[in-house]
Length: 391
Image (cartoon, rainbow, N blue to C red; front, side, top):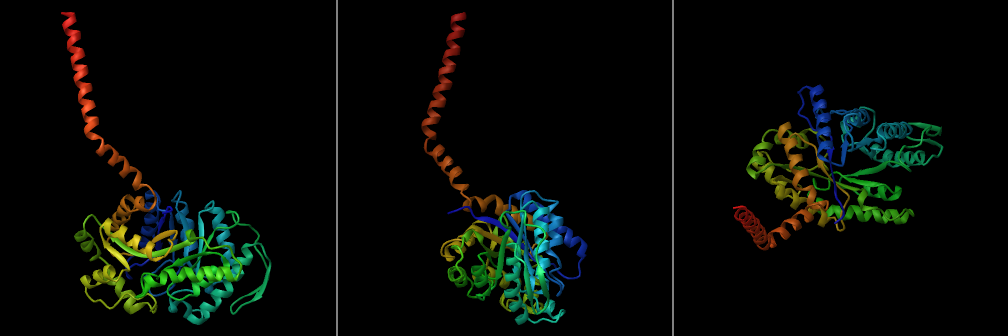
């Protein structure tokens, strides 16, 4: 297995009514915590309504987070490019790429909340059509082309970027996918990565994984792109881990109900199907038994990642943990710490060497212990001889 990267996909999900200033600060502190733990990536969402996902500009958040971190890569997860002039999307990301010295990533999608697009006179069909148009414009701009094109929302006239990206030839770009083939189709066409956001949140989610990548490969071949690299495929999943299963269950009593209520009753986003459970035990069972996540121990987390890897029919590049407030901040940070300590090594080639070293020591302990005792006996006898010779 190649080294699997780990990260977070931070929408974020916060219960409405709390102090938004402190919630945003907590998100920044959380990304800093992940950087210290060695997480590879953090993707930050863009939303403008419905009260729970409160980051309106992932680019501004990334600029703030970049000043607090050293190594973690920071992506827009995702920029709803149907809402924006594609020229300015590309321009802002190039600037971020320079400010972060190459730690910037661009995730694109149509926008998940219809309450967002409705405020600017667009419906979900409009946003998906604009996604297709705008990503093409953005890719052309990033290649250094001059673009003249009228879209449904903007008119570009000899538009071009005044800066080239810091990253050569360009920073990572990925297209979001929930259940439909739209995202994989665009990823393959433009030779960019794929963010499978809802692959484990749909009832047939596991079946969708391999299908997603098949579409990427088919479209890439059709448009003459290089064979897609699976390292650019990121899978988003759900987890909360504690030292014991019982502790994990107690932890999520803090906030799993509002999270379920958000998807069941507030967000008009039926692709993110989280079932119809109404009690905490039923919600936990749904997450674990439907195969869409893991609430439990590090063993449960490892098993979930392995199932996803196997189901993807060839592997993927990064496991992103969907950010949520199921548990309080302290327990959430501990969950990510446990995953870094005890799940990362099994998928990054670091567990086998120490386990093998332990086994070698165990297998040869008896013989080595005997030589140690013999050495002690030898030195004791030598000392006694020295004493007797002095006497």
